[in-house]
Image: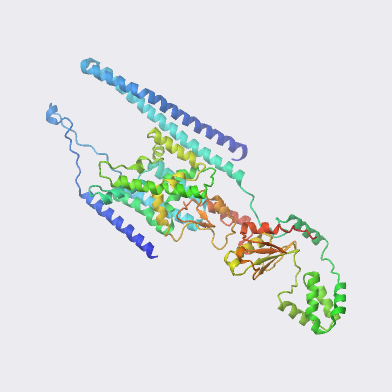
Length: 323
Length: 291
């Protein structure tokens, strides 16, 4: 319990740091000097330089709506998994998330890429991030401390699209799974390294190599589109390859979700030890008949496969009659 | 939609998906070849315009043409990609349904009647039901009483012998004992229910002793017993399956804790069990082998 408190305190400090950064950022006046272009006096003839045009930011209330929707989607995800225990509902949520966070919002702002923005904001005094990015980054971590990787399931657009293409999952051998799983921590370290570099060499690698964002936008570099398509084709047979082996935010979430007390649970008190749930899990997240919080991606397939869950129960003898 | 209709629709969606991918790829490849050429054209025109201002409208027209072309291309790609997303959704949805229909295992419903796992035993039950309760041959009891005597002190040896002969204490045999000896029904009832070795209900052909000693308990003996009872369709409060093939007993210790969880089927021992392998252990004795 005290460990969880320490983690929550750490999260709070980071959030406060980002908010302070944000407040400071609001106070800064920004103007790009136009010096290199021909000036009015050089052009002559009464020419007036037009005002510097900046793209308008997304309206504030829409940004707040985005954060609210993110929070609501995670709340619904937790509710479906903990209370409703239904795969069908979760698929509906997944489709909605791909539609909104993916194709409508075009995969941005996402917590995965915001790792680097938050890192830069915390290390570089000249860099500021808006409140929306702060909230987007920390909300899923906060939820993970209590309920595990609720964000991964039906909320994350990148995860959701892979979730939907999964057709015929093969079980990745455990050793290989573990070894590949380490890649995401390497990626996380590289992302942080590229973020703390001085501004000139800084590189937002996570967003640059986001395999699905160009699919959501239906435009982008050909190699990124091909990479995204490749991940999706691979994802038809290997469950969510990006989430499990590459996603740096997945690495963070799996650390935080170790503290989670609730989440996907295999029918306590009425299980049959039949192992159908472990067979159904495409992510190898069920070990010894228990869902492993740090691996569980909230897809609820185990519920769908369980003879003791949902509509199938009706086909069975009432619970009292079978010991 | 189901069956062939679903299959055809899925194949059609897959074809549309592949076609739109091919179209997008071809479009991309053509554009890659085309763009540098038009860039060079524009650059050349711009150079000419710098020398001869009269050519400016030609340059403007060319630039407009390229802009229009790019806009049209952008719209085309947008439409194609929307078609691709729609077709992919249709294909995946259909394919998932088809695969689910293929792979769905039959729902295992634990039956209340004859065990589904031991069909031979199930037939035996049907035969038994047809023949009603079999008559018990009581001549053994008569002979036994002649040998053991008729006094109350002979109660336990008589009960032991009856159990050894019939494998349980049939009510008819006990009534016969009361009838022929000085032993009272109350004494028989008391003795036979006090000692757990005596049993009043028929025993199955094979006795399965599941160890519930400390080591086996910790290693999951409860789950093993539960699984066996479920698989054999043993009703609550009973210990023998409806076909009287197996009697499942919980015993204290079988003396091989290193094999925990362990069970014995008659004289065969099976260790290091899991709920999945518990029922395989029963196959050591074929059901109905002694029938």
